[in-house]
Every structure is written in structure tokens, then in C-alpha cells.
Length: 445
Image 1: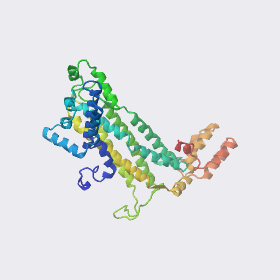
Image 2: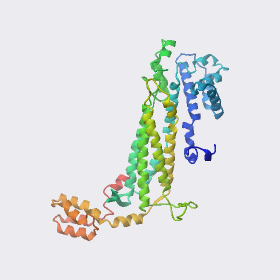
Image 3: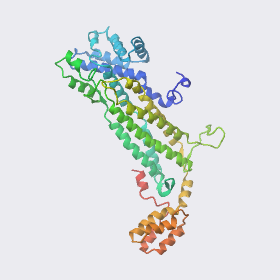
Image 4: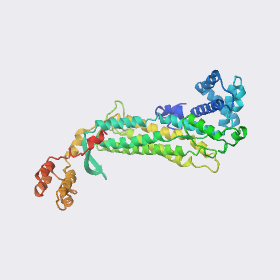
């Protein structure tokens, strides 16, 4: 496929940022996960004595079907699907054909034994998300923000509340806020239990029980699902209800919202000239203004994080709802899981690129802060309160609110209040640049 003819920018303009997701979220990957689930199920039937024991050679031949699964093999399944109009049944027919001329021909009737399509599909999608979760780029973004937090830990700057100058902070501490928030969500993302089910057409294990009444099929189901690394969901309708998926999507949305917030702050710091962007030779920032170096990476991240969350929001609200035992509307929605993760990965790639191009404009930050003596109204009034100065807040408000204040103005007020000399001296030594509290420590936590 030529990227220029792709309908979606995921497979077109942003193909380089998303091509690794083909291993998890493409239709080819879905079929490979289905093949894996079917074969593992058949092997489990053998291990538990439902069918005869397989030899080492037979096990190896089954595993080779998974390992050698290719686009050509997948195309063969798609041809079967075209004829019968059922993708899951096509997998079963494909595997039957693979085994019918081998020593395993006597067990072909146990391929997909007792199962409904959802038994395999829910495991396939669980594997899909499990594999992605171990390879998401969120940790790389987190590591970069943590690194810059450490690098910028001691750079004091004016903070902003309501867009107005507020008590000083350090640039590193502001980065650390986002790192701390993102770290919490990443840990939660990794801890969410992925659940799967294996219980037949309406979740009653009925056909299993009729065929083999002597087998405890609930325990069997539990063992199969657990062996694949998932939490068994034993009580379901025909479909696994996807509640765990909603947990994943909501966690991704929270992580993306944090990075959306971060992207907007980065954009703002660039607009304030606190951060500069390294100009890349040959790049153009504007079709008409040659001087422009636009914050396009952070803007790109902002747009794609929004797209990702729109998909996740729909999937999180749609997938857990199904009429009675099931309806098929979840099937088509599930095929778009990769879209949400793809837009997320595009954003993460843009953020990493943008963070790799920024540098601190120390002169601008320092000049802005050194002119803000009014920011010391807060510590002055706190010290005044400590030593019993009446109406300390109002004294500082009258002196500073909405006004330009100098060092001399503050020191003049100090000379007029009755507080201990050592407290006066401590305040006279205080400057906007050093009034940063524990910001430096926090930036390195």
C-alpha cells in the first residue's frame, strides 16, 4: 500500500510512527492470535486427557503453525472467509486442513471443540492488548520528562496561576509534576488485570458438559485462561463483557490527558520565550514568515491525544454493553482498538521529538523573575503573621496588589514593622530567585 493512498493518516502520513503496531492490531495479527489461541486450546485438551496425548513431534508441528504463520497463510484464511462469510469458522477450517494429512488427523474434530467464536476472539484481543501494554512508548516519554526535570531542577522562574505571575518555582519542578502524575497512571495501566473467558455459546459450559459430563469444565476453563496469563472470568454471557478493556481505555485516557496538559504548558512556555526550539537546517516554519520556528510537535501531540481519547471514550462506553446474551455491534467496534493506541503512539512520538529540540532561555526566565519583587508579598506576610503583626495580609495587599514593587518598597515596609531583627534580616536577604521553597528537591524526587 502506498501511504499516499491511505484513507487514514495512521497508515499514511504517520506510518513510521505506527507501523510497529501492525504486530498487535492489524487483521493479520488478529488472525495470528486466533491461531495461537486455537492451538493452545487443542494442546490443553490433550494435556487434560480429553483427547489423546500428543507426541513431542506433534507438539512441535502445532507450534510451527504459529511460528510460520505468514501473510500468505493469512490470505488463505481470508479466501475461506470470502466463501463462507465467517472469519472465525475460516480459522477452524484452515487448521483442519493443516492437520488432516498428518498424524494429528484423528483429533481434527476437536479443533474449536465446544467453543463459540467469542471464546477465541476474547482471548485474541486480550493477547493483543497484553502485548501492546508491555511495549507502549509511555515509559520513554516519562523517562524523558524525568530527565529534563532533573536537568532543570535548579532553574528558578515565575510561575503562573490564572495566567498571572505567582510564587516562584523551578522549571524542573513543573516538569516533575507531570512526571509524577504520568508515573501513577503507567503503574495503574500495568496493574490492570486482563480477563478472558472460555465457556461456550451462552456462558453455561453446556455443550462441554453434555459431551464429557465427568469433566469439571469450570475448573478446566479456569486453568486454560490462567495458563495464557489472564484472569479467568467464569460467569459471563456469550461474550466476555470487556469491563477490563474499559479500565485500560480509561487509564490510557488519563495518561493522555496528563500529556495533553503537558503539551499545552510546553506550548505556553515556548510562546513566553522561556523555552526555545532548535532550528533544524532545511525546515520551514511558515509559508510566508521566514523567521518562524513553530511548536508543531507539541501541537501535533495535542491533536492526536484528542483523537486517541475520542476513540477510547467511545470504546470504553460501548464495549461493556451488549443486548441480552450478545449482539454483534461490539465486533466491529473491537476492530478499532488499534486506532486509539495508534493515535496515542503518534502523539508520544511527537512529544519525544519536540522534547529533543527544546532548550532553556535562561536569560529571559531570569530577567522576568528578577523584576517581580511583588512575589515576595507572600513570604513577608507569613513571617509577619508568625510574629503577631496585625492585618499582615492587608499590609502587603495595600503595598503590592496590582502595582509594580521594588526591593526598596519591601525593605521600607520591613523597617516599619515590629518583628525580630533576625527575621527582618532573613527577609532582606530573600530575593525572587531564591524564593523557591523545596522546588529543587521536588524536581529530583
